[in-house]
Image (tube, rainbow, N blue to C red; front, side):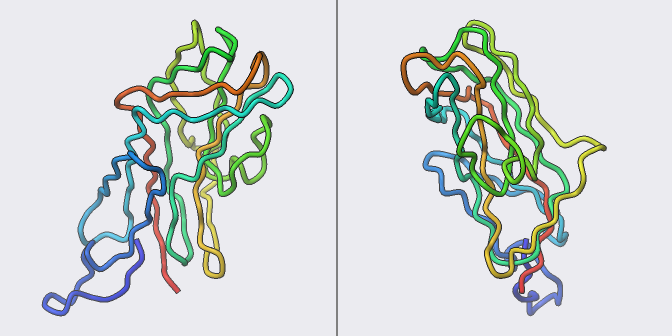
Length: 190
């Protein structure tokens, strides 16, 4: 988190001296984890119970939801993952894959690419009888994303897509209890 001032009594930075990112999604429980004196911080978002609309476009469906607003500064993402159960709505095919990613932009179609996936690459989740478990995380092959958010602060989006069989109208993806997104990062404020 961004250092704003040192603690006047100890001369060290503590978590209270950092600016934290905020979550604009109603009903998401946000926890901050990490050593009180460490610049590396982790934010955990409990997304259990969140129902996101998959907008129908031809036979596909997609959603881009902003989940974090960082303060202005240089942000380095060290680690990120999404984990938990998910069910899809009645307008989705019973056994269609659900793609998930984290990016600095929200997707506007069912193709997750470019800045839709520049934090956490797109991962396919097998949906069987409209239920599955998302397990998406950065790997050793994933580069460490760095963002110059000095003139325009970094926003993080959860992007979802179904490539086929979104039938008569918009569908949905609902995350089960215990589903979460975790992001470890360093931010230097300007």
